[in-house]
Length: 143
Image 1 (cartoon, rainbow, N blue to C red):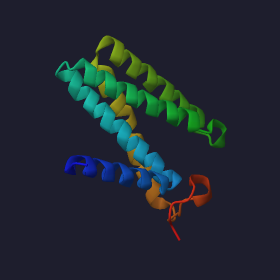
Image 2: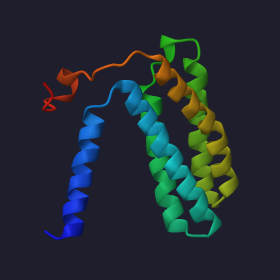
Image 3: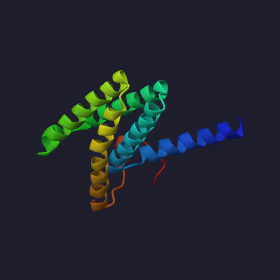
Image 4: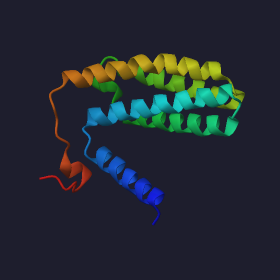
């Protein structure tokens, strides 16, 4: 194994362990971080007309929006239906951004989602420290 392959394998193992040991709120903020990273990359690729890279990042962003939508318990709180509506709207924007190669849709998505990411981080900071549920994620080698 080369040094590069060894580093890549170690990084993948670290990322996997970080995800498996994360609390639900940490997972949510990680999803938002990756979503906005994908959108930033997509917008930059659109601006330089690198449509393959833009497409890849927009599709991954759509996958994350789909995951956020499917994991949302809409009736758990008053804002649930509005958040689902926002996710549906952003999903449509990302589809249009991809099909029409229109970076303005990507920018609008970023503008809508960035305040949500900040709100989730603020909410996470207000919660007491949580340990992950080991029974739900399997053996993590903790304790």
